[in-house]
Picture 1 (cartoon, rainbow, N blue to C red):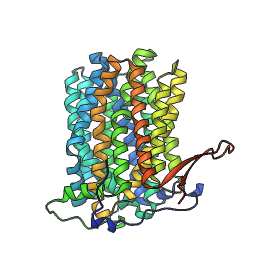
Picture 2 (tube, rainbow, N blue to C red):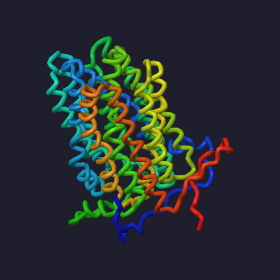
Picture 3 (tube, rainbow, N blue to C red):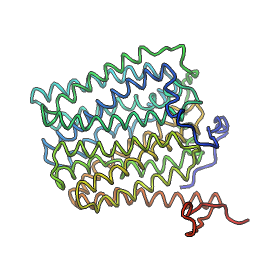
Picture 4 (cartoon, rainbow, N blue to C red):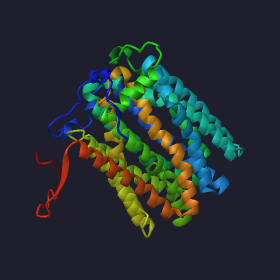
Amino acid sequence: MTPPTAEPNAALTAPINLVTTRPPWSQTFSSLKIRNYRIFASANLVAVIAVWMQRVAQDWMVLELSGSVTAVGITVFMQFIPSLLLMPLGGILADRYSKRLILMISQGAAAVLATILAVLALTDNLVVWHIYVIAFVLGLVVVADQPARQVFVNELVGPRQLRNAISLNSSIFQMGGMIGPAVSGVLIMAVGGGWAFAVNALACTLTVGSLMLIRKSELVQMPPVKRAKGQLMEGVRYAMGKPTIFWPAVMAAVFAVFGLSLAVLLAAYANNVFDAGAGGYGLLNTLVALGALCGAIASTRLATLRLRGVMAAAGTYGIVLMIASAAPNMVTFGAVMVVAGFASLLFLTSANQLVQMSTNVSIRGRVMSLYIMVLIGGQALGGPLMGWLAENWGVHGATLVAGGMPAMAAVVIGLILAKRGQLALRVNLRSARNPVLIVAKAG
């Protein structure tokens, strides 16, 4: 697990943006002062609400059509397996070509796919294999979309506002996750899930229009990377040679396989444990998103980026999921899900910030594609795995595994980092404020 020595080009990385004091509350939304980012963020909020609506409707309709939690896991697998296999190619595209153009093409394709789903569902012709195929094609679209989207944020706001913009993007994603599932649950019960797909098709079309409104002259553009042999391996060597990229990626891989398949487990809890139906499933997703929104906003208040803070957030999420596995009723379970959402987003946002701020912008597309590959691709493995565990071990046992593995990984990585950094754990039970401290070893 030891990363190799850093390549010489790692020295080209710009300094990580660290500050010694917590940013004032007035700066919480500072990146929104930039016109291009305001347009992008506004359209992104609408799009994310619609994406969450489609995601909840898709999972619930698979469960309804098949009666199988494993089928929901297979849907997750089909959507994320392209990311696991092909995401580095998306990173190369992001480094070589216009990120804005890539996003316009990918969102246009997503609109077409959502329209097909809507037509099939509203005409009562939708079957499970249709959802599998469209989920797979949508996964191919994500391969091009996600690396370009991550790097495009830097072009919109520049390096000084990058951390703030990443946190706000996470806040927008979770705000959409808070609104979308609730709206989707109501739609499913009132008129059927097909309308959720139709709304997403419209939202993707609006996103394309918003990208056309962005002023190219105000973008902080970098010269495109010229085509050359070995560019993919250059990104791999670069990522493995930097601890601030390598270890968050390792943690993200474990986190994605076990912790990010929560949607599969929530469907099982709503349907099999609490008998809450589609509305209850939407409510549980909304509670997770509520906590995650708070976590994303909290990340804008962090003064420094540290590996140990990233690992602590991941470990906390794992412990909270283990607690959730013993929740006696839906009220208690829902309250724990709020805390789980908070810890989850604190990890995801901090890790994303650390990886981006540790990477030279000329290679950032390839590095981010590798990071996204393990984060999203891991869910391709985790979806079917957690669905199988839920059906064969019970949903409570599956939840215990989903939390236990990230918690264990965080402890192991923390011990490795502590040993390399010559750090030790000091316990002082007399101090109510700081009972546990990480300090440098004597000598």
